[in-house]
Image (cartoon, rainbow, N blue to C red; front, side, top):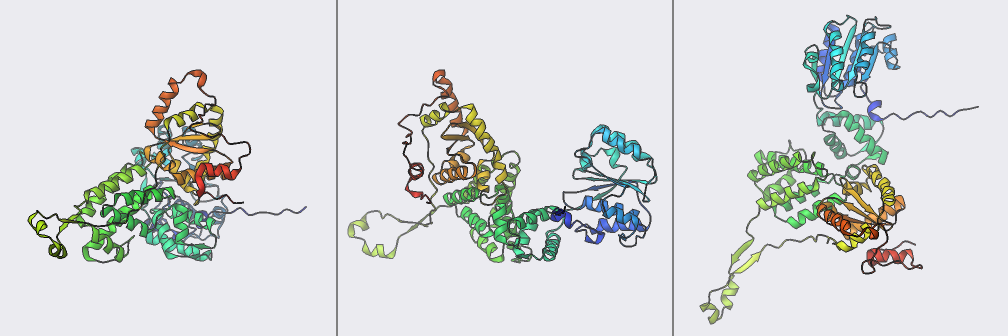
Length: 559
């Protein structure tokens, strides 16, 4: 019998994890110090590697463990001796890894302590690598403390953590501490390009720049983001794909939005911002991008040099400086910073970003009226007009208005009729679907539905309709005609649900609950649709008729 063996796919950050000290990105001073310690045989019994995620802490710990047990170490481990080979095969008996995030109790540490006195089986040192060490309980730390005070000569502890402040001081004082810094965008970009070239994948440099910026100093994050892009398009990495996959807005769109803010075009600003949101834009990322635009404009305003610009070109910086001043830009930076602080406490950040941009626009508001009496009018004056006090011409700068899509306000009686017709079983069934929306978080074409409904609640469900409750902005977005239409088709195509979705805010939710309580019990949970508000479909009604009834003549049903 023959078997087809399928090799398991290994993700990029594991495939390209540093195999040598020379491959470690962005931590050259730490690497040099550790190499010198090995060469001079000045190895401590306990190390603490602290720093942001994805900066190489665990990778360096493993390389260090391999190097100190290598039988032929020079500048790097030899990768040919029995210790190196055992490490490369992943079964070295003297290199023990523990994830404190899931093994953080005193019993887990006692298992280690019991094994500490025994000599190494293969190498010179027995190395314990404890990742996320800050997750250990206080009792576990105290149990470990005695061993750290008087460790056997053959035992080395390497602790890795993203939160060193949570490690108890008595443990910290017994470790050599190495602070891993965030990796620069240039180094992330360089390493990403090396990997793309090894994988023979075409790429746009601007796309790599965007991934490096999004990684925020983490090499592992950069490779995870790259992995996601290649899953979408295995043949090439393009800026368009990156923006599409992660719900990013282009610099051109952001600059246009910023200029509208400083031209006090509030309607345009709100319309553009909500359109970006509906298309799946990450509002936190957008706020950070706007802050970067402000920073770049301030840098350019100093000497007009573009070498230090990160997000803008010189031309874009000039466009911004035409509509605002350095003083106003500094105020903008403060407003955006304060708004970003509210992101963690609020699931729907859109409202705060809208208010921030409206506030900036209001601060820059100027009187639009300009009084001017033209020469032509002077010549055309009649004698009577000359006696009268002349009326000034008012010239108002014309701006192109972008219409904001109207919001459909649903009658409270209609919404109450849905609530009275709702029941628990239908809500449970629809709640299961509602909970699956998180699956669409990273799906480019459907991310907007996740963004739209995050932080909302499935309030009620009957056989024909679903009511979603959220804040005012969320309810308004749901109740626009185009979004109502898109939500209907999304639910129908993805889950086979043939229902309309209506949005309500907290005020309307309270009103509905109050009306429901006032309704006699015998009228609840039974069909009470009023002919005035709903039309029951005729038995012979076609799908096309139904869609026309729901959405009007705009909808064309494919045969």
